[in-house]
Image (cartoon, rainbow, N blue to C red; front, side):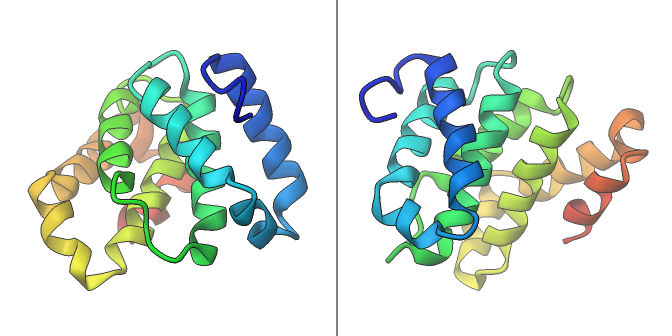
Length: 146
C-alpha cells in the first residue's frame, strides 16, 4: 500500500485487505502504518465523488486504528467534513455512514467541538438527514443522531 497508494484502485484494494485482516489485530495494523496510508489516500482521493467506496474504506480503516494511535491525526476532521460534503449528494450510503461515524467519534472529544463547529458539521449532518434519500436510510439515522 505504501508503494502503490498513489493509484486509487490499488489503495482501495489494499484498504479492503487491511480491513479484512485487521479486525482482530487493529493494534498491529496501526503499528504497521495503515492509518498513514489511509490518510494519504484520503488526502489524494477524498474529494473525488466517484471514489465513495475508497473513501468509506479509508474512513473505516482510520476509525479501526484510532484507539491505538498516540494522537488523533490533525487532518481527520477536515478530511471527514470535505468528503461528506462531496458525497452527500450522491452517496454511496455506506460511505456517507462511515463519514458520519467518523464525525460522531470526533464529536465525543469535548476539545473537538470548536473545530467541528467552525467547519459547519451540525448543518452538514442535518442536511444529510433532511435529504429524502438519506433520511429513509436507517443506517444513517443513528450516526446523525450521535
